[in-house]
Length: 142
Image (tube, rainbow, N blue to C red):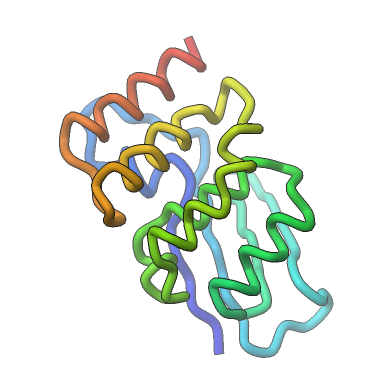
C-alpha cells in the first residue's frame, strides 16, 4: 500500500498570498517498494516524488543520519501529515538537528520551521512563525 504526503515549500506556504512554487514535492511511503531498497527520487517539470520504503520513525531517522546528504531531506520530517503518519515525536525530531545545521542558505527556511516546532513542542506553526519561515524562503530566492 502507498501513502502520499505533500512536502517541501508547498506544504508550508501554499496558504500564503503570493507564494509561487516552482514545483510540488511529494513523499510516497510504500509498504512493498519495487525497484529500490530504501529510497528513490523522480523529477518531472513541476513535480518531484520522493519514494520511501515504509518504516518506523526511528528507522527513517537512522537512515537520514547515516546518509545525511542532502540535508534538505529534513523537510519530510517537518511535514505534519508525514510526521503524524510515522508517529514522529518532537523528542525524536531533535535527533535530526545535524541535518538542520547543515542546510544550505536556499533551504534555511526549514530550520525556522524546525526551531518553531521545538519551541512549540508540536508540529504546528503560528502565523508569525510561518511568516518568518516564508520571509527566509523569499530572501534566499531574491
